[in-house]
Amino acid sequence: MLPNDDRSDSTKIMKRQKWIDHIFNLGLDPGWATNVISRLQDTSIRLQHYCKSLSNQELIYKPNGAWSIKEHLGHLIDRNPYIKKGSRNLWI
Image (cartoon, rainbow, N blue to C red; front, side):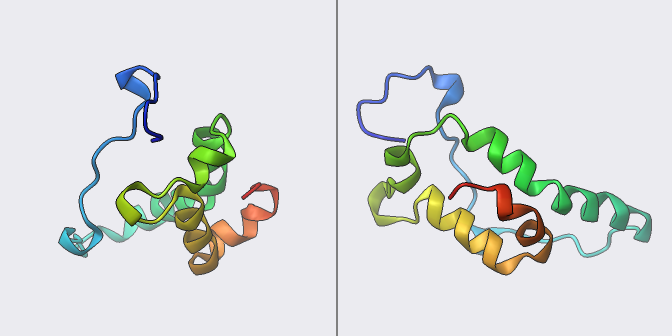
């Protein structure tokens, strides 16, 4: 979010839990694997949907020195084969 952003509160970035504080539930039923894979395969579509209205300034903004949205997207694309496969249309 850029300083002096006048968008409504409903479109501002929510506070996220730190990755290192997340507790993963590895006891998923095997039947959920299809759902998880489907969500991963559709990630590039969802990223495009949520980011298409953002300006380049918003995409490169680094709040308090943290990673920018563009850096997060690049990391996801580099590390996830399902996203990488669908990312040729992602405009980062």
